[in-house]
Length: 237
Image (cartoon, rainbow, N blue to C red; front, side, top):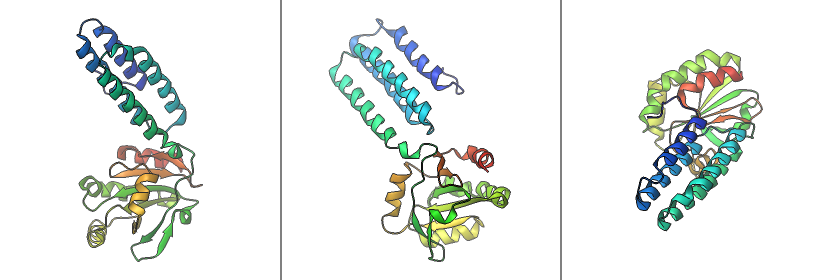
């Protein structure tokens, strides 16, 4: 079994060696399934890569090399067509995220705060920002409120601001949760087409989703893990 602490290089080598070890043992049909499953795993790992452009380019080269070497082992034409189409779709999805690589300008937004006042991302230039995309129906979002309150309490005096953006339309429950948990930070809600636009602009596949933006309005990291928030905030102040 692959250890959880394995790097992407170790993982790709693991996939390569697995396929080589099985070569000639399985029937053509089973080998086709086996190789395709391993290649799809490699693509999945690529999609989970944090948005570092150099690292992304290196992984693309590794995957391309793996495909060139291993796809001739896929004799089933249907499976071969599927894995090649899957690769194209994965590449397309990942390349669409280029605007979210570190150093890229964060996408603007114009939303309403809890009092109905219009707020834009540009209003917070000069502060380190954590965008917290959340929902009233999202249990992990609600359970993590104390941690986010702690971030505000620790770093607000150093120029940090937490911006909580609601990704649903239950505004009554939204206000109740803010009051109940004494939820700190700036609270914004979406109207019109803004939920859809934010999901596209920040590549939001699920919530909670966190994005760190530097004091000049550039992406530090998109879709950062909750356990890493403190590290990224502290190291960029």
